[in-house]
Structures are given as structure tokens and as C-alpha cells.
Image (cartoon, rainbow, N blue to C red; front, side, top):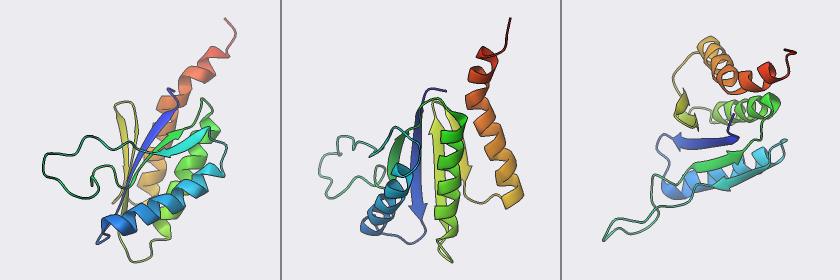
Length: 134
């Protein structure tokens, strides 16, 4: 696992200010976990004539999770809880490690469980195999 998890959050009907606030709340929650750091995704260069925040970076977090599977699992659990607290507001979360993407938006709870297990497995199997005796 490369230790960098990118999160992109969205809430149906939320403006940039609301999404920025929600992202800040989730960031504070994630910092309470066993992670190395949680920062806002850096804003890119705005297009000529653009005003305000770059919508592609609002709602973005970069989580330094280290190499432990427990860290990745804890972050995903916190993200799922954040989604559930949205009540009737439809919240979407996209998680990325390298080119691997997990989108927690419209899947059922059972499907999410399977997808999450596969995602975690793809990013932690190297550390488990390294510990096996030759």
C-alpha cells in the first residue's frame, strides 16, 4: 500500500461553502484515528477568469494512512458513518489509492461490504505476504 488515500466528498444540493464545512468535520474525525495526517487536497491553478473556489478540490482530502490495514479500514468505517449521518441528503464518497477507485455512493450495504473488503485486500496483501517465512 502506498499510504496515500484520496477522498472526494459530495452532497446532493450542497454549495461549496456547505461542502467545505462537511469536509472539515470529516477531517477532524479522521484525525482522531490512527492515521499519519489528513490534509485538504491542494487546489490546482484556476482557469483564466474563474472566480471562487475550485469545485474539484472542495470536498477533497488526502489521508496519509501508513501501511496498516487497520488504518485503511478505520478510515473507510468513518467515511461510511459520515455518509449515513447525511440523513435524507444523498452523499457520495470516492476513495482512491493510486489508480484504484472505490465509489461509495449507490451500492447496497452488502455490496459496499464486499467492495470494501476487496479494496482493502488489494492494498494490504503485500504486507501480509512479506511476513510469511520462505
